[in-house]
Amino acid sequence: MRILIITCPKRIDLYNYLKDDRGNMFEVLWYENINEFKKHETELHELFGKQYFWNDYFTPLKLLLSIKPERIIFTEIIDQREIALIVAAKYYNIPTFYLEHGSAGDKETAIKRQYFSKTDKLIRFKNVIFKRILTSFIHTLRVKIFYYSNIFLLNNFRSFYRYCKLPFLMLWHLPNKALSLCIFKERVPKYSIVFNQLNFEEFQLYTGISKEEALFTGIPFFDQYFQSTPISEDHILYIEHPMLESNLLEWDINHHNKIADTLLNFAIKRKVKLYVKLHPISDISLWEKYKNVSPFFEIIQYGDYMKLYLSSKLIIGYSSSLITGLLCAKKNIVNIGWHPTPQIFGVNFSKYNICHQSLNIEDLESSFDYWILNNLAELNENDYKSFINKFNYPFDGKATERVINSFKYV
Image 1 (cartoon, rainbow, N blue to C red):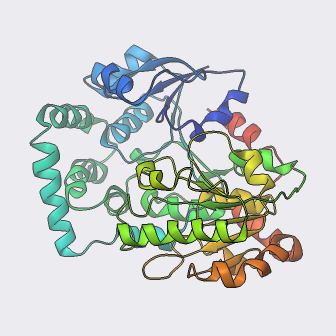
Image 2: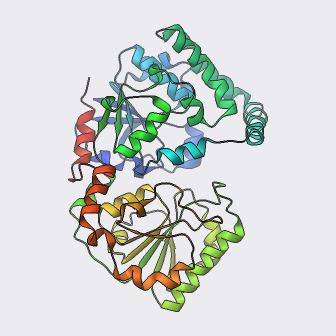
Image 3: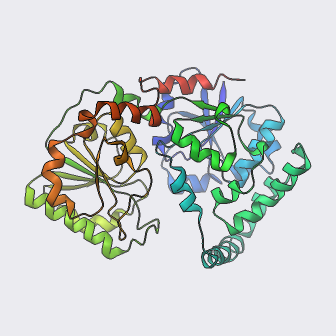
C-alpha cells in the first residue's frame, strides 16, 4: 500500500521502527515547501519514497486527488491543516490512523500544561495576531482556505459549528486545550494507535474517544529493550530536558548553570564518567563552555546511544518517554525534579517503587552510593510487573509488529 505519513522527517526517532514494514511504501508530508525542507534537513530519510509539501495543495480534496494515498497516518492531530485532512479523508473513505509518538503520557500534567492566566491568554492572543497572522498573512490565508474548504463535509450542524469555531479557540488557547473544548468525531482519525493506558488517558482529553476505540499495541520504540541482557559499566548518564528553552517551571540561565556546574564538579570529584544526553530541541550552545573541560564529562545530543543507555550503571533523568523504556529494561533510574521549585513534572515514576526519586541536586552527593547499590527495578519484581501492565503491556518485543499489522485495518 501507498501510505502517506504526516510527521517531521527530522524526528527519525518517531518513525524509524517502521523500516521493519517491508510490505508498504511510505511517503511523507510535513514542510510548507522545498525551501523549508532544505533549511531544516540535508536529505530525506530512506523510509520515504517521496515527499510532498502543503503549499502545493489549495484544499484537502486536491491533495487527496493528487497523491491518492491508500492510508494516511498522523503522528499529531493538532494543526488545522491536519484536522482538515482528517475530515476530508474520512468523508472520502480513506482510512486514517493516529500513531502515538510518546510513551509517558500523564493526564494531570497535560491539564497543567493547558492552564493559562488571563494575562497569559492576552499575551498569547497578541503574539498570535501580530507576530504570526500579520507578519505571515499569505501563510495564514492559505491555512484558512485549506481548512474552511471542508465545511460542507461535516455530518451535522453541531460538528459544523465546532469545526468553524475551532480556529478561533486556538487564538486564545494552546492547541490541546482548544481541542479539548471542541470535540467532534470527524476530526479524530478512524483508528487511534495508543501505546499504553496512560497515553490513552491523555489522548482521551482532547479526542473524547472511548477505550474500545483505541488500539493498544505496546511501545515499539522499546522492543529492542526486551531481549537486552542487563549489563552495567562504569559510566552514568544524565538525561537533560529543555526546561529553559521551553520556558517551563521558572527555569532561568542561573538555574541551568547551577545544574550543569554541579554535574561537572561531581564527575570530576568522583572520577566517574558522566554523559549529559541533550534533548533534540535543546540549545547545545548553553553547554559549549563545558566541552572538553574534563575527560569525565561529555555532552551528547544526536545519534544512536542505545548501547550507552543500556550499559549505564545509573541513569538520572526527568520524567520522559525515554525513562519509560529504560525502566522496562530494568535500568537503575533516579527520577528527578531538580527545578527551581522542586517537583516531579510529568509521570512520577518513583511511586511505582521501581526507581529512586530526587527533588534536589544536592542529593547527588549524599545519595549516590545508595543509588548505585540498589536497583529498585530488579529488587521489586511485583512492582515492576505492575508498572509494565500500566506503561507497556504487552512487553514482548512485538509492539512494532502489532503497529504495522494495524495498517491493514479497513
